Length: 372
Image 1 (cartoon, rainbow, N blue to C red):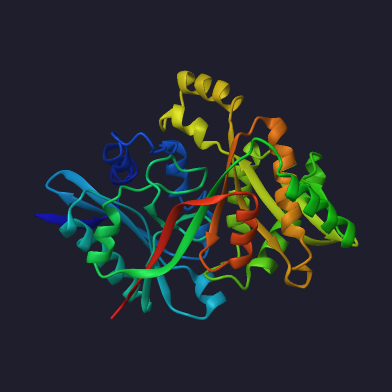
Image 2: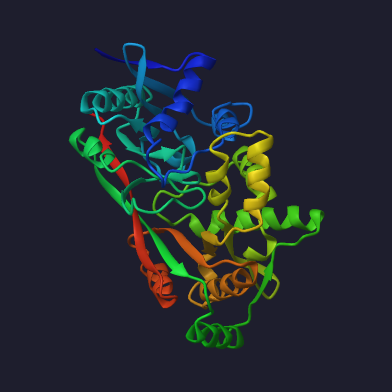
């Protein structure tokens, strides 16, 4: 008999975190998260998400064996921004067992219904500002930093449980062996024609803090019109900065200004999933040594997010961002890159990715289900 129960103890949380290590043990493309970081993520003291929304974690058990997991969460920021009543689920992992999946989804739906929601959406871990989407195409390569990876049968588990597609997210792959001549010409033309400048994230600690606040102010303004976009709270911003700043390469973080006024930003990162892969979820002297040497030879990078404030769009700023990211990445030893994620209906970004000879190689799907 399969029972679904909430996580109520440290032992339960450990079971929740460790389930994927068993499910993906034979999948060479899965990248184990750091167990210590996962524990912090689910700790309200360390994650600003808990300051504004509620979260509950569930385990599906068959006897004493954990065979599935899911989170259910409200997102007050989303519902204020979009004026709807959407509840969310995330961190879904399960054996190929439809009964277990159905019961997990039912718990997430029932809990969100009790919070007054009329739609269940996911997977979101916990929001669009973190890992999101179910991988439905492109299982043959490892995910890049802050992207998900799933087992192929998960799509079947969701559709049979009554979920339907809300939106697809694309990941584009491209080689970074040389800067395309057509891009260099186009970028120089755009910069000459339009009055804007592009600079990198300051390495000065005091100015860097100011730059980060500028970036997130641009992010809030530029993304407010996008599907599903949710502004970061101060607590979430602090958590994200604390997590990512130690591994950010300033030359891959770009800020555009028009007459000194911030107009856009671009954030690319070295793909530290290459490092996580050798650590296997553990932090100890052996894995730290492996991580140190691997971090010196990262050959992939991801363009995570990019935004231009509405009044400064259509000036070619985003094209110039791509140009400078390429130009900075090549001397760093970057050989391959990913642009992700891109909404399926973001025609402009898709066209720009194709200009760099990038191709869609992974598709992630967000699902909805009506709460009756």
